[in-house]
Length: 457
Image 1: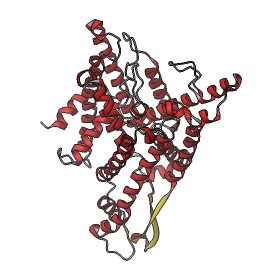
Image 2 (image 1 turned 90 degrees about the vertical axis):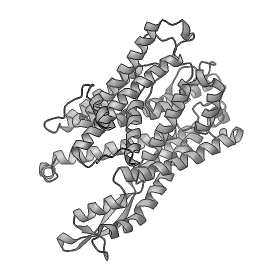
Image 3 (image 1 turned 60 degrees about the vertical axis):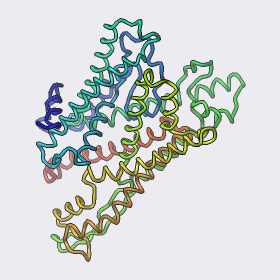
């Protein structure tokens, strides 16, 4: 029995929602998606029983957003177990370490169950790591063992609930995926928190949110324009520059998500009608940044859990090279900022190229699709190899360009203190755009039932 089969059997331990017998109506899917969102918010708002603090070492915003984590709550693990399990298995399959044909429905089913099984293992490991590291107590040695076991159980339970919610959404009861929904909620949570949080910062009496701070400053006649525009950024607080950067990035990303590169083709079965196949300008969308962020977040997370064993100073020194740079980082810590920037871009390109191969977006797969659909490139033989070499001129440059583009957008957002981080805005805009496309598609099928039958829906 192979690794996939063993993990697939473990994945069956968790109850899963059955696939709907008939396609659920759009209204009911929207309602279910809203209920899943409410369930996640409740998990992320419920404090763990038995802890004293949410965490003695604050989790960086990038980790909280990418992994949809909320410190000290039932959503502490977030989507970490799900996405990390999927990332590990996809890399192993892509590297041919695990041989499995994902085009086979049965193999794909086992792969999905294996991701779920590995997610359970990672949830147990991460939950145990959080408790063993002692981040929830001032004096961990004085805490009774039964309290620690209870906290581990709560963390695992919360992680499993999130896995089940994500699976139910993906099986057709909701729209999109639970992972995307939870990330979007986390980004919106932080964006409006940066803008509107009225609570004072713990280290002083200064209000955190931008608008409440401006209101308080005007009322006390202490308004400092330079401070609210840029200087607050040095302390990691929201600024007007960060807000304007957020709006600018949202506008740029909205344009790039809609932009297309057209490849001319001929439909031979209809008398040689000429048309075009549009390739998205952001060919790999936000996947490279998401995978890079997950990898870096997991490294930082495990370093934080091991800091009692390898030393707090060692972990802090490493984290400086793994933390997104700000405007002030390039001035006061240039080597760390430059190292992170270069590493982030290289990883994004590598993950972009890897994703194209794994997801069936490479020239060979696209050429096969063209041939099966009766399409051909004008002036070229209907040979998959010839078509693949032609498409490679478009696909690989687009992959590198889009990977670099999303990496730069993410970095610009982090450098100028955008709300919800640059990576968060990148992910949120991509998710909202995907939801928009999905809603248009589903609404069109409901308006034209005949079209639904033609498409086999």
